[in-house]
Image (tube, rainbow, N blue to C red):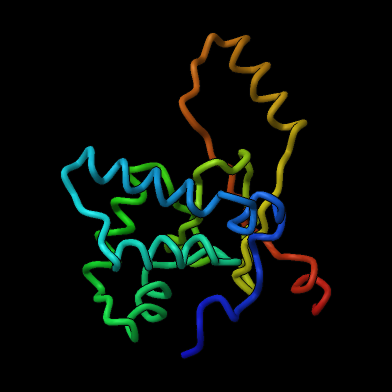
Length: 166
């Protein structure tokens, strides 16, 4: 099984904010370290490697993909799964449902709000922003006096490439 990052690139909608941005990676690492200290936990080399893999990813990652990629470095399944849970609790990563109802993860910290189109055929997850939809939601929430905490849109269907195959 190859490197998870060899597969289709998905995280291409916001290419300028990624880990290549000056200081971004270091800032996210520092935030994680600080959150771990608040929880009386240590920023281990294994946790650092898991976060670094997320920061370098160009696709949404499953727990299993992350484990398979990091297993050769001596990082166990339990460490991967617990670190993913910690990264979620620290609001550094977020869940995205995939085409088969499973969970994938992406870096959430310091990224603009976006939604997902999930291809049921090739399983690609496409990121996009819908300013018009956001305006409609805001208008409805004001009208109904609703206070949102967060929302997520995931639309399931077929991407252009799969639709054109017939």
